[in-house]
Image (cartoon, rainbow, N blue to C red; front, top):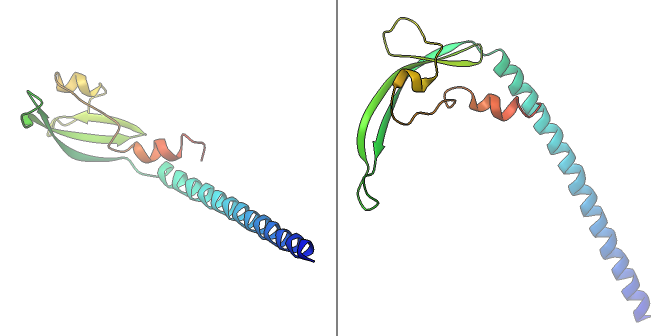
Length: 129
């Protein structure tokens, strides 16, 4: 009789585990579908996004020695445009944007591009959303 009780207890435990796993699998599938819908919606929104511009101020600094504090080297103030999915740059008031790399406009020092408007695109569109 004890063996029969153990058998039924084990059967119930395995049945509960299988049911829990099936529920988790179904929930994972629903979550994957929801994420795909969100990516698709965001991709469409980004495709319809108009061209725009802003002024960006970047303070560049360096630390002469590990134990010292960072010191400001210079401050860049640039106009940044996202036009047709491409970033363009100019100095404020220049009247037109240059189709040059940022380092060619700035001339010296560390520069970086892509953070103005491409982050959502790269996360959503390039994954095939």
